[in-house]
Each structure stands twice: as C-alpha cells, then as structure tokens.
Length: 262
Image (cartoon, rainbow, N blue to C red; front, side, top):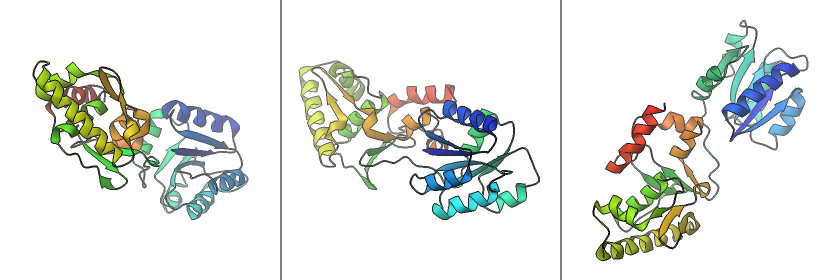
C-alpha cells in the first residue's frame, strides 16, 4: 500500500510521515513538501491513500486532491489541517476523512478503516487465501479445487500455523483426532500428494515447504486476510466479522486469540 503525505510545513510533514511508518510498517510512505513532486510521482507510482494539507503556498490541497483523482480515480483522500472551515468543500471531492492537527495514530487508524475505496494488496501471481468466514483459496478470481475435504483442511492448518513447521504426528492428531499410526501416516501421505497436485495446478507448488518429518507453507508467497489483519492492513481489518475458518473446530483457538487482542 502506497501512502502519500503532502504538506509544505516540514515539521508537520515529518511528524505525520513518522506516525504512518510506525503504524503501517509494511506500507510505502512517500513524503512531499511540493505538490508538483507528488503529482509527478503519482503518474508512475499508484497512490492508494493521500494525506493532504489544505492550506499550502504552492497549491490548495483540495485542488491537489482533484488532480490526484484525475490520475487515479481510486485514490483515497484524507485531509490533514488546522482549519475546520474547509470541511464541506473537502467532502465535495469525496474525501475519506478530514483530520484536525495535531493528528493522533488512533485518528489515522479510524480513518484508514473507513476508506471510500478499499485498498487490496497487489496479489501478482500469489495465491489469495480467505480465512475470515469459511476457509477458501483462490488463484486469481477462481477457487482452487481440492480433491478431498481433508486435503483442504490440511492446507488450512498449515496456513493457520503461519510458516511454523508441523510434524506429521501433529497433523495426524489435528486431522483425525487420533494417535499416530501406520494407517494414518499412509492417509497423510496421500493428502500431501493431493495438496501438491492442487497447488501445482495453479503454479503455486512452491508455497508448500516439505521437510523430512514436517510440513509448512511459505507465508511470503501468499496473500492472506488473516496475515494482513495482524499487520492492521485496512481491507483485512474491515473484512473480519467474528468468524475465522468457521468450518474447522481447531481454528477456535486462533479465533479466541484474535478476539482477545482486538
């Protein structure tokens, strides 16, 4: 997510940029003291959210908002100002919010949670994983097909563990609620083979990490609402409505952690 900050007062510019970097460490924060530099950058780098001062010597922030939206109509505008009299005019350019200086991180978080145009991550060729509600996996806009329900559950558990290697005994206990046995180890091998085929069918087999006696996933190779929720990415925060991998009873532990940390 690319965040633009435009303010001709250097102290205010540095302060807000610092707060944004601390609050959204996985986002790119681009700071500009001159409006022309912000507009030039916006032509080459997508601006997802623009934090704009209104009173600036070079160009009025409201006019700048219009020009940024001419470049990219999905740009979210959040005005930052010490003056309240521009509020009505600001909302005429469909601003997401109007924050009065000095601006707190809480005010920024609330504004980012209510953007007019939700900012989705750039998925590139990554799998998109939905954990909130029922667990689902997508390649592009199409759901990934798993041959067996248990194969899908196996992948869900690996996603839940966020890259931590899971022993085969642990996976057997979770999937069948039984002790390790030769029969269940054979079943698990079949599920792993099925999972590998399902991922290979969408050119995502590298997501699965196989060790001698353990399995894991590579979290950096997927886009996941739960992972982004923990990083406070707005689209993920807004998509959580109290359910996490609802079809799996073992997911209730993670759900409880989510609720306790909200």
